[in-house]
View 1: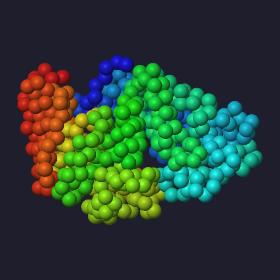
View 2: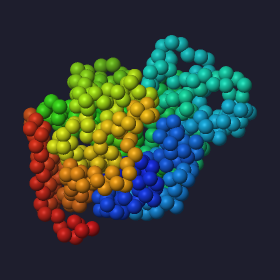
View 3: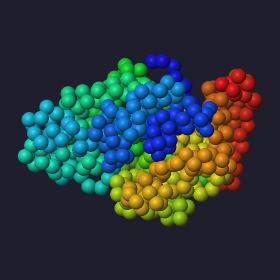
View 4: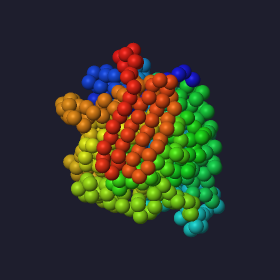
Length: 486
């Protein structure tokens, strides 16, 4: 595998930030020049605007022509480390393969590609087995459908529009290999395994992050590495499960960091955050916000195995969620839970800036994100300290759209001039250029104090924060001129 940079990366939809793949590259080369080493290009497949904002691909191997071509993607990958999603669990109900199965049933050459209840429970399942299936949304993960004239229970973990793949079958495995070949052929060097925790279904288990899931992830990681790609695993779950999976893959998200930082700034107490810094995996991708909501299951008690406490108590998780709702003026409450469609039971929908509601608190949180070990990724709305898009939420009724604003070029240029955004850009460039970040990391502090230090030879950079006073200071040795201008 070729060496690649691991500086700060941008997370963005091409249609919502630049208008196309080429337009996004022009932003990175233009007003954002020198800011990002890489980009997580959110689903650009056909169609990018389906029932789940591209996470329900009709054709996972094709670039939506409204966004560009594979040549545009390869040009972006030639200038920036490029991450893209391998949507492991499902495809669109409108895919050609599933439409053929609907029409022809078992007579379709694609019949083995999709999962039904009887594939996992050939002899049926009792109430305890079905109740034990872990799902991110209320209800059972089955949708009655007619396939070739026969009524079946099709496995649909997320929505009826997203049909689960049968990854125990050769047809399901072959499908993933085709998509992986298309991605890496398009210049993708980091692959994000979307929803992989739900991908393997096993009778008598929760069908979420089971030993069979771990084995599948290990196998898929090998296949991706053979094509020259690193693997990022996307799983919202108990923190100990994240630590376990990190030992088996290239990278895992630090999904505990966003809610812990909110808890820390809401309470003025950094104890829970410091505890996490002592045990978190270093091979993490750090985020505060993504195209999804703010996860809370990642810091709470285990929802699968009883008796495993979380990084926060249930009461603290409750206060955290209420804190987001209060600071957003109730806007997040309108986008979360039963208030909006396409919801997840473990996430609160709100921009991270509105979850804090204060420039200084926001910059303190971003500084911590940029200082902890891992590859930092900044979501496009968070880059511009974006506010909740209540108009888009009202128009679509999709909770997560509150944090998926469509930016015009004029809005981007205006927001890049805001003081909070300019200061964030300075922090990002410090993270990318200072040699100390390539050395050793140390965390210290007590009470409301937090001190994060990196050292490499004579180079040193330290973040000193008081989370109660919401004050932050960065001390750094001078950056060598050659590094600073490179």
